Length: 230
Image (cartoon, rainbow, N blue to C red; front, side):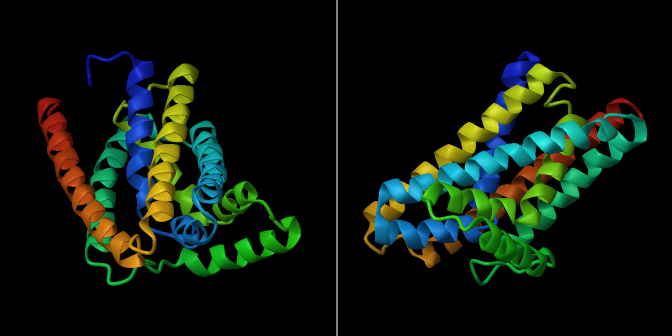
């Protein structure tokens, strides 16, 4: 990975982050696809996912343009690297030990109110706009991308270049679409077998992956700090 040029590295980083975090938390979009896909089929479910993926990329791009430069300097960069370890392990444990598909957060109430207002004003009727508006009203998605993009920049997985950031956003788009493609196909072909229990198991597996990623990230950060004698 370290031998890759900035653009491919950024694209891979965005792809992996999107693929991992599209599945967790298993929130409104995944549940919407689960419900709608079983009733209306693969195409309808996939269009919901494409709308969600579009808004995900917009939030990712906003995070890059508005916040990441703050995380690329001195002590802030080091603190962000440490924070990313804590964030991954905390989030992993949260979803690993979850008892329900919807893991409640403090942002849920605010997001539900905002989502209801957007539904009233925009009246999304198509599958694509349903997915787009659901993510638009989810404040947790924007907050997650702020943390993720800050982490990617702090670890130098995404260089402070327009081309690298654009490649990362493209990777996010591909990773998000791939996940929703898999989910839509599974729901439409599962005939009820792709239930909330299946998503809950997937959430637990993803929680384990996040914890392992956090531990690996922590070892990497510790090694870097030791090497630079910080």
